[in-house]
Length: 472
Image (cartoon, rainbow, N blue to C red; front, top):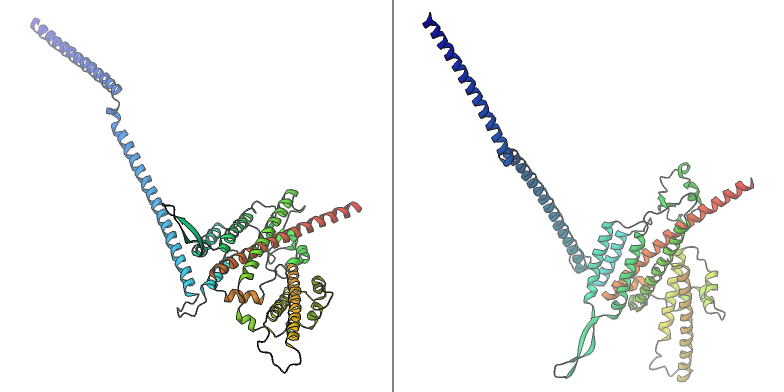
């Protein structure tokens, strides 16, 4: 029993010792785990990259990929812009080639040499460009950026010819040894040097005037689609007599009380500025046309005397002692621009008939069988020459008064003949450029006048309504 007890106690001792050893080992392992955890925490606190480097690497790689994508998109966008820009440059070059090809061919695409001269080709190109960009200027609004850039770009192409039109003037050149030598130097031709910068300035001023019509108090309504009950435009359609002949133009509209005082003041100022531009363009155009040579074809088509040109009624008035251009125009039927243009053509023809005969030379070998002496014939010729010069001056004053009454008068037969037969490229540029600016300025003034008319009509109608209500 004792042995057994000892044995059992030994087993218990062994079991206890084993348990203790397991507990000690477990406690040792626990302490080692705690130590390792604390060490890991310490290490992690000392170098956090060791624990978070896969996540940071993924974020960095993601950022790199996003930056690469953005760089790729930016590069693609830049390449697209570069391609578009190069494409625009190529298209402008092609357009310029086409324009100058037409100028060189004289608008004869067959190339057979039957085209017009260079001066007329440039004149037609400027006229057609103005018609394409501005047309008849239906509304007072800024010009679209595409049309504005097209106008400036192509006008520069057409006007660059004037940079090579020069004249030679004498000047002195001094050498290092003090000797002087008279040489001929080039400078821009005087008419182009004076008038072309002025026309460019007028051009820029007209574009600025159109650009100023933004955030306006007025608007436009198309006549074909307006509803009388909705906006009351039926009354304007009856009373707006200014647009009866041009029914396609939109009707300007203003607020019920009319334009404000500041807007009306600014509108009147703009009209005055545009009218001054119109006068300047007309002056340059008339001077340029006057300097052009009269074509022989026009002189050959004139009648033999002034009576045949003017007709009996005008000839009797213009040869009377009590002549007055204004009184004569008051007696004539000038109901339309067409009639006024016909009278202007007849008066202009009479001027050149009288001037040609006034400056004609007497015959070299007069016939000896004539009853008058040579001195008598010369005296009669001198008297006839003075009389014809006086009649020509009266006809010029009549023509001037007629053009003042009809400022929108189109080109006369003589003007058209001069433009068609002119071969001076410089004069052709000045005439066509001034003519298109004159047309543009006139249309702006006409649209402003239509707007002022509608504004006055609106304010007058409001006054009538107020007076009627007060009377009631």
